[in-house]
Image (tube, rainbow, N blue to C red; front, side, top):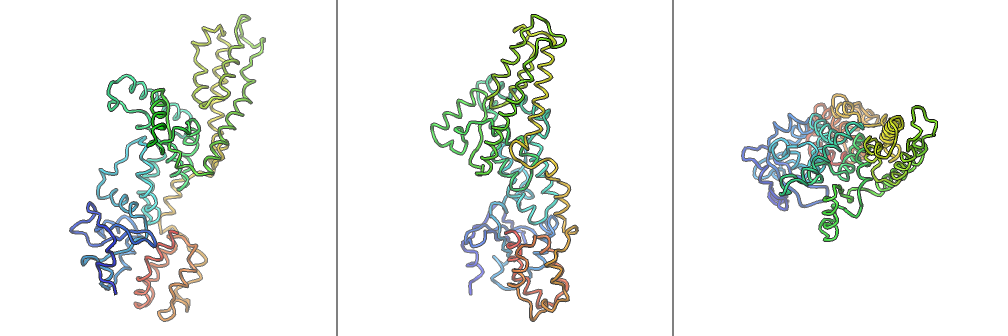
Length: 432
């Protein structure tokens, strides 16, 4: 039989989260891994945050020396150790995990806490992180325009100062689309996807931040920064994401072609001056057909000054402006369709998501109803953990959590102890 210290001999203590007055050790490592991290924290803190943690601590009452670390009860968590560390840092070291608006590192910072907040039903944290993440990405065209104006101002500031640290490039300050797409896909945060995919579609794939260690890529990225450009991390995109990206680019091009005729004003256009150089409007739009940033170039198309110098009359200038604004809005509204993304009617509803994380709102599933507390299968003598695991292999964590809580309160003491031994397996299974 292994000694208490040998059971976790390959685990490392996380010094910043191993408190002298802690009363529970969380031993975090993925299934099958012998390497993990140890955290000595407080049951009361975690129980207050999560009903899952509260019941884990209630059920894990083993007196077996193997289930202790340095005399403190140890609970095995089958989660990524870094995710557990990031979650605990949110509550124990808030300054480390403080989020700022538009930070390109936000997806990396919150992905672990989001996973565990969802798994362990920490509804308040889940909602808070989702709101912050979604706020970084425009949901409307006016919001997009405001962000783009702010980014251009940042670039101008960067060009005006001698020390780059005084005004860093936009890539350092504003959201990065590749990591945002990956996070949004994982958690079905589809409100973020239209703006993130459109932004990614404007970028040069040869300027991949994931390959910044390559000299030629680093040089190319420097050139892009100097010319007011942006870059992205293409390593986060899946094959399906790349297909959606290419599809969106082509559909925007087709949309621009379809709209081309609207800028070809007839000579009998009302309020048009006979000497008006109306053809220059169509010529100018035609130059944008292969634009990599239709929204920005169409916005520039409505500048009156250029038309005045080209001899375009006031009536045609007004019509050109109105048409360009309408085309911009049409493109923005069709981004989900063009990039083959979930339509707005199917997008993430935060209130529903947070409500579903509340165990008091989780309905029973048929498979669990069948396993009622009066079923002969669930007796102290006949209860079989493997059979129950098999029956729950496609059951959600909230349902298993609810059933286990009921079992621990209603079944005989012997059975409760046996469930304690396998509770961690239930938690791990439900995550898979």
